Image (cartoon, rainbow, N blue to C red; front, top):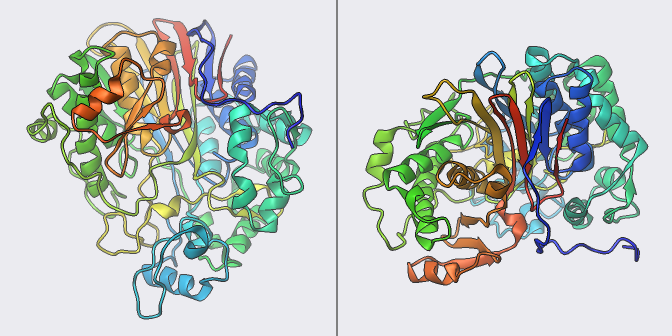
Length: 564
């Protein structure tokens, strides 16, 4: 129960203003103030932006546990002080025994008897023995892919950091064991766990007498703190082998899933080449497939082709033309983006592709299908940290469990919530993201990096991102346009009201969009709807412009920018 001195916040009001934060030696932007402070702690102790990013990600595992953690995946995009632009991918695949046939049979075997079974979660599924109409479960053991975070954190600090993984985990361990007061937006999101958690392992780890913590309430997560301390002492191997791995495998297999010790032990981190495009004199970098970064790049290319950025900032025409570009990018991305080890992906980020796709865009909304059904990825809970340091490093690191608290399963005794990223697979063998053993699912997570002056002898780089399922590439496009086309300050670029093209074909806008813009968009043929602020993403940005650091944070979240 919420006490009188801890009132429920009104999450739909925007009554305060923020300034862009400036500093000389470090900038950390993320969705929770205590996590941002963890990053500054690492910077002050001699670490760099990479160390700080991992410290923040680990701290968010504790202070925003429904969105991120050891049981999920992590990705990074960065520009180092010596000029390297690179990316890190710590994303596990489906278990070796997770064939379409095995999952279908397991769902049949567990129908009606398990809380994660689709019909018990509101899905209409024909699971008769002679039917193939069984969808990939959104929750439960079959939705859990191999978690990549622990090895991703370790690889990041070992390859580019100046401190150890153990050092980076100390703030998170302290928050988990000593406790912290829960912030407002996170308290609201935590409430979903009261209905989500039906298993005692999850209830014991994250609920107090069956209830989520209220805003301002002190909470401790001692089991998670012990797991973090074990990894701090023994490294990421302690997650993929030993007692923690035993608990994860027992949790999954005990509920009918297929994740094995071998699946965990064989996981490795990758450092793929980023993909990029030139937009109005800037170079925008994204992650390659299996992530949806190509969707953002294709949309930017189409938008430049039709000169959408030249439309006035407050105009319905600006929203219309960018939304039309997004429609085509989503249509293509959802048909072609998959694990590149299993299927080739066409050059969606090329200018030639954009020129062809822009030909039928006019002044009236077009009927372009979103992509393919059963993606289960439109809305998701994710965290992002953007860090810049005085040495010249900028890092965008993203960490997620996919849905809030992931699969709804928590490995017994560990406090580790397990992701449901496998829900993005399909049990249709003809689907672009059909389930296959070892295959990585279509991933929504896309950190970003932008070079604001690629053709000048000027050092002006930013690490950024906008979290939230299919909002992510749409947020990238809107933030980049705000900065590049309209030269807005960092915080103003994040504060601007947003829109998003929805999977059902509607165009959602925030209620605070003024000037009858929604009405004018409807007259242009869009199916306009008003949505809540939390549906429009969580943006963070950290910039290094010729040695001056600056940062901004998402006004729709609890976060802050910490600088020193």
